[in-house]
Image (tube, rainbow, N blue to C red; front, side):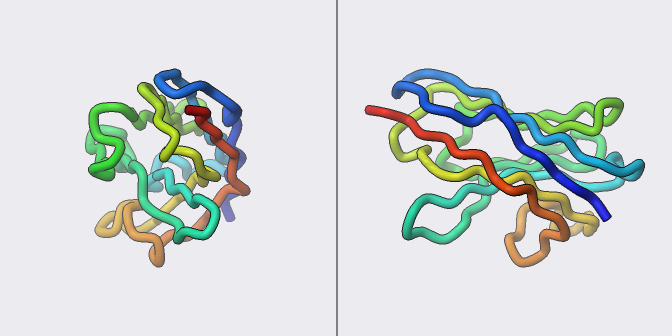
Length: 125
């Protein structure tokens, strides 16, 4: 069992930055692919970013490429999402995700094994 706890959300003006953190419990953190998804009101949850167990491979949704950066520190059991140049359309509840399957690699909504509780990001225009 893995527990994920997100932090770092908040209110920011368009063009600003935020860094989300996700702390994971358990001793097998380094064996999971980790990712971030988001869900805006009235919309489906969507993929944002993911990295593999070592952090050496990263993946991004087209909408955030060049603005967001995912990273992880396996020694601290933590994954991060640095969000720069934020836009109003980035407003959503952001969820941390863990996936044991190296093929889907925390990029496929239906394949996620563990979810965090979410942290709200609001970008004012």
